Amino acid sequence: MSGLGELSPYLVLILVGFLPNEIWRLLGIVAARGIDEDSELIIWVRAVAVAVLAAVIAKLTLVPPGALATVPLTVRLAAIACGFLAFLLLRRSVFAGLVTGEAVLFAGALLFAA
Amino acid sequence: MSSDLAADAPLPCSAIAFVQGLLASFRSVFTLVLIGTYVGIGALAHDYGFSIAWVLVSTTLMWAGPAQVILISALGTGAALFEVGLAVCLSAVRFLPMVVSLLPLVRGPETRSRDLLLPAHFTAASMWVESFRLLPPLPRERRIAFANGLGLGFMLSGHVGSITGFYLAASLPVLLTAALLFLTPMSFLVSTARNSSTLINQLALGFGLIVSPLLSYFQVGLDLMWTGIIAGTAAYAVHRLREALR
Image (cartoon, rainbow over all chains, first blue to last red; front, side, top):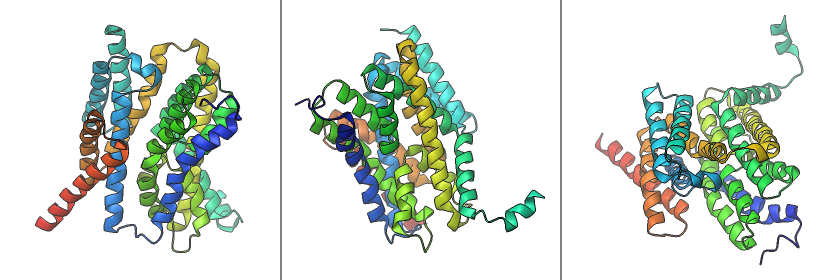
């Protein structure tokens, strides 16, 4: 059941890309109705959002998509750890964290190419 | 003389706020991250035979980097449509708590629901993180326009990246594509950490990083959702406990 051949690529995009993705944002609008910015519920929901984001970070690092999977797991873990350390040491600079993480990923991938 | 202009010009303050949001997006570190990420997505889409128009429409409609990577690689490798839709749907769970926590910050007492459609659609990690940093000092009536400008600016950067990646695809080495895909987890981690000034959000980030691999290891289904609920609630519990002991 590949299906892509018979359906227009744009119809496929709407059915399995746009709709299953956008449904959560629309539910968010409905759920946010009448909730106060400083309420306890919002404090909890924001913590849940941060935790889901953490899960996305872990997944993209541990089970990465496409070309990133060609970089060994230890190199990916070292890169994200060094990036985070640089962020903490260099005045919580996002840019410093990004540059360090990417540099370690490059160096590690070149050194330990599988 | 330009200061008088602002006072009596018919230009509504929402238009000014929109432009301010747009400009703020280009000063954000996320502009670089988004260009880089979408160079990777554009190259991926090219390799799987999608058209550049399809890529730009998918970014405009979905505005979700990880979900677009899933969609493109799953469709490209001929996965069943139902399975693709389910994978996209599960990865997008994060938008629910993001939108629920962002909208009360964006809206004012007289905001209509339909005015929230656009800010909700623009909600993604980049815009969500930057909104919590940039919106609080702004007057309430300007926040929606500012958020829309911010979101549109980020989306335009994504489009620039997609077009670049699509046409460079053939000449991009595998390691560079890997490095571009690595931008997403790296930037999500440091920008979320920077924004987590309160203990509860720092704990939610830390707990989430531990709980998610555990759930994956034990092959628990819907692991994104469960990580959010378990780690988020645990962080909230510590926060309540600390308040109670104070």
